[in-house]
Length: 109
Length: 113
Image 1: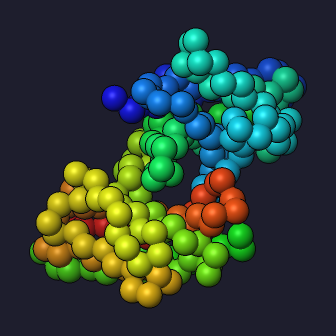
Image 2: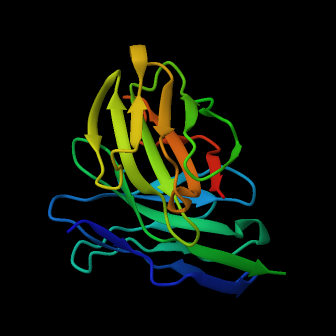
C-alpha cells in the first residue's frame, strides 16, 4: 500500500530550538519524496524534494530507505517557520502525490 | 511557474444543487491535478489530466463528480447533486515537464448546507 504517515499533528518549539518533523512512508517502488509547506492564508508550496538534496530556508531532509523515513530538520527554528508542513510521496509515472495528514509547527518567541 | 488560479474562492450551496469549479494553470503545465482536502487531513488525489486526456480517477470520485480539460488548458470540476460530505477545499495543481514540484492554486472552499 502507498501511504505517508506524519505522527505528530502539532509540534511546538521555542525560537532557536532544533526542529524535526517526522515522516514515514510505505511504497513498493523507488520513492520520490517531497515536503510542502502552507503558511497562514497562503497556498501550498514546495519546500524541498529529496532528489535535489538541497537546503531551503535552513531545512534539510534525508531519505532513509532502511527506515522508510524522510524527516524534515532544521537546527535553529525561527518564528517565521510557523506553518503547516506536509510530507508527500510521488507515484511513479503519474506524479500524483500521496500526502500525509500534516504537522503544524508552532515556533514561540 | 507564476501561478495557478482557481475560481471561485468560496462556494456555499444547498444540498442537491450542482456546482462547478474552474482551474486555470499556466500554459507550461501539461499535467493538471485535482485534490480534495478536508479538515485535519492532507490533500487527497481526485483525478489528473495530461494535456486534455484524463488519465486517472480516484475511487473518491463518485459518479456525481466529473472533470474536464478541453484543449488542455483550463479545467473544470463539476459536482452534481451535492451532499454535505462534499464540503471540503478543492485544490488544483499544475506541473510542467521542467519542474519536479507542483504549483498549487489557492483552492475553492465548498460548503454544502
